[in-house]
Image 1 (cartoon, rainbow, N blue to C red):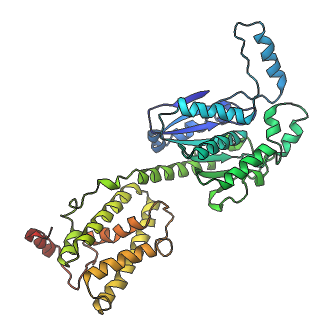
Image 2 (cartoon, one colour; image 1 turned 90 degrees about the vertical axis):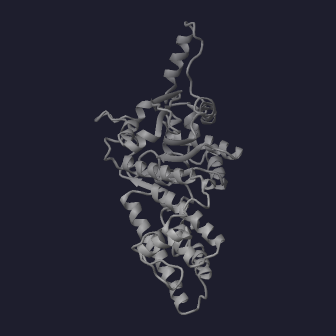
Image 3 (cartoon, helix red, strand yellow; image 1 turned 90 degrees about the horizontal axis):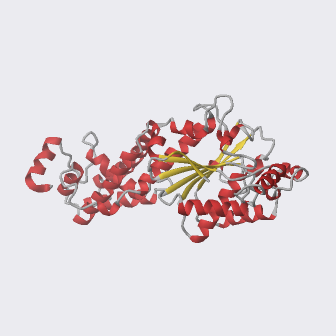
Length: 403
């Protein structure tokens, strides 16, 4: 079932999925009484942008409990009884819940522990085969992607079908691993592994061919990785960081690039500088459009670390401009049109090399606009012909109809 922790009609949902013999209590620290969702909700950005829920399903390690429940139903009007069902069947139930109970959410983030991650993978791969998924981010906490040796021992004390699924290199698990490796439509996935693990070997928690940037090793064991003590817990800190990156990237994806109109920035200094240099209208319109892209990006990436990265990027773009401006002075570049065109072209060429950045959603189109953001700053000497103008002179040019 779906059990909401917070439901405020946000566009995004964080869904917690427990593992074998677990429940919603999986996410509660017995010492501090803090729950994982509550610790995330202490952050205002998360609280204001995400609803949070648990997906809870029946799972019992020892079948005696299950048999007792069945016996009780023989003397009850309710003839249904909980029982351990296969991982694939649980995944089918979860998919039904997502399709019909969670259909209002545009983006779903899954935080799954142990066997819960195998259930999540099965659902994610089903959506991948359909070519569409609202699951955008997946946190894998001590998930036995290649199985767990303890499952072999567990089969001696229980006939639970779920334990059979978790045995090392079991066919169904390996099928999921192979499908995952081949799929091209997958959510961003971060693999958390506890270095004090005794249940899931670290090589199983981090499946083959995982990018090192997606690996998070923490000083936790199989239980404590899902039971953070407080907001200073490394698992909480890490997940908060990734959730905030997700929010920024989502905002970049939501920018309405069709909204920009060519006349929108006519009174900006960067436009005046282009016009007085007699730059062709097509290049001016292109510059306005990319200025808009960069303006929107600047509104999104506002943290101190983001600003530092952007400052370094601006410095690199300005250095490229100065090299080309030198070519204009020495007549290697013969016109303002050529200067603008060459700097635009060079920025696109260097997008993934000299101008590469850890802010992954910033692309060459945004970077093209950054040179015009710099030109709009009157403290910078960004001009497109050999003449340089003061603010008063640029204001006078505006009054004469350049903008």
